[in-house]
Image (tube, rainbow, N blue to C red; front, side, top):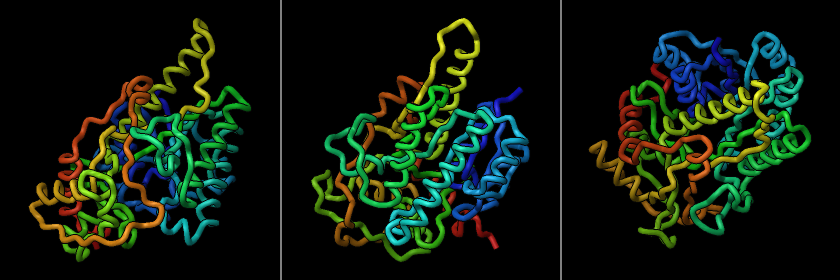
Length: 353
């Protein structure tokens, strides 16, 4: 019998790619998403790509009764928790919305999980919990601090998971701290489809390339970096999806050890793990790489730094490799090629009307 996983936010950018990876790894999945920041068409396309329908439930993680119905109907081994709002700028203007959805919603989910004795969860955290790093590369022991409500909501959930693990050692709680996910599925059928003007760099670049946007604004060119622009750790979304599979493989292995009766009980507790490449790429380097791959000019202008932005941010990835046996495999060129394939095939994303 296949191990069954509930994927909250599974119709979103990272969630949809992870659904494919989980299916390919032999997991059975149920997707739960309120479609506030995602598209039902993504699940339709995932179903086509994997060759079978995916059970989809339209619901909010703050809906206790619906969650109870779902958990009563399915025997889940665990949950991958993607559901959450993620726009930094919006979080500054609407902090209560972010705390209500991201923090209160997670509490509701954890309470229902506890009711049904489902105590394995992989949480979609973020490198934003590190704030402005004191040293590079950033490892999981680095000081955590945040500069906006979005990051604070991720950090608040991490604190909740830590406290939960300390209170009850039957919980296994992995927080995957993503760096900068980019790219698309190599088929070109699913990818990042932001509402309105993109908040993230890669979809902005790709929309300039298809003439949806006039030019790219690069915030700051006077940082102490290779070319004065900010440096980030970009990771291909399909590598990121494999990181989630590796995390659940790890939890399932520990579960078998626990239940075998031949080994000592082992609890994962709260386990934070970085998912990145361990390499930094500047904004200008990414723009040039995308232009080379696409054959399109990417007009850009330099503007003032944004408040809260940092010069450089890239991950130490030793822990993921040691514990999960996972490491990123795909290059910046791969990320640009797959993004361009998705964007050029579907310039308006999932809106094909």
